[in-house]
Length: 329
Image 1: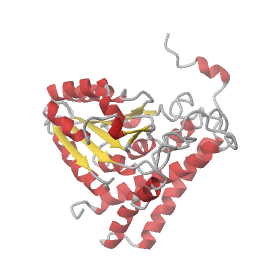
Image 2: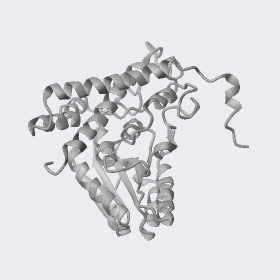
Image 3: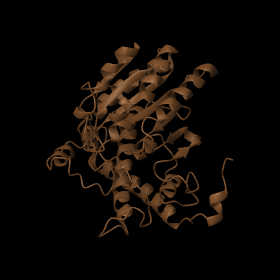
Image 4: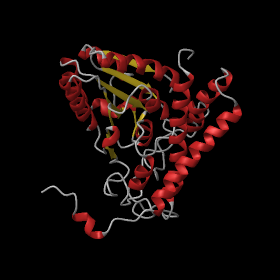
């Protein structure tokens, strides 16, 4: 922990706190009009919603080492990844609300966020972002650039063919590619122990002759450390890496999930180990920030997120005829 600069710790805390507050607001906004009987199509934010409260260290711990030119792909639970990659927050929120000012003009929704300005994309198909990230890594190598490509996936996606096919090529060609496996223990309602033949996916790196890292207990400091090494290796042409982080999912697979498959004590136990509070406590304990300074930082974060929500809420909906634009035939 002592080798992490104040600048990087504050950056990580800011992105983690911003993601948490963004999701807490979305948790409430999404349920508007969907109660007392849950209706997935009702309310100002229709469709499915997958929130990532608890998984913030996975994104902040590696994105702190990335630059604008690096590529990031994310899965169906993407908000913390997008915020850590510094996707335009106002346009991202507007996209989730289905507004014309959104990243995809309101046509993609929360699982399809694309921001070419920071080379970020995500999608709802399990493991689909891995080949795209490997393609970006191949492009970087052919262009002679030191750009890195990172694919975030859930632990269930590590059992998909795209994972193994992509890693085989990335290893064969020594591409600047990193796959971050966000192991939150659950593939929808299926526990990892019932779906995966290895306890942790970092051991699969040996099959491809690449580096594998395991971060236990959602540790933001360890995620920072191993990610720094993996990114530096990728930039130097030393090939790909697998990072598996044992992270937490505080909420259900989707909003409206009754979570009957989880023990009632699981979430309270996980929340007691909140990684955001761990970073805040470290900053204060090490004399890098005071309580007053952290309160001011929190206020700025809340203000920025609130502005993004106001922008989205007050933005216009697309016109019906807009459905025929941006089509490929």
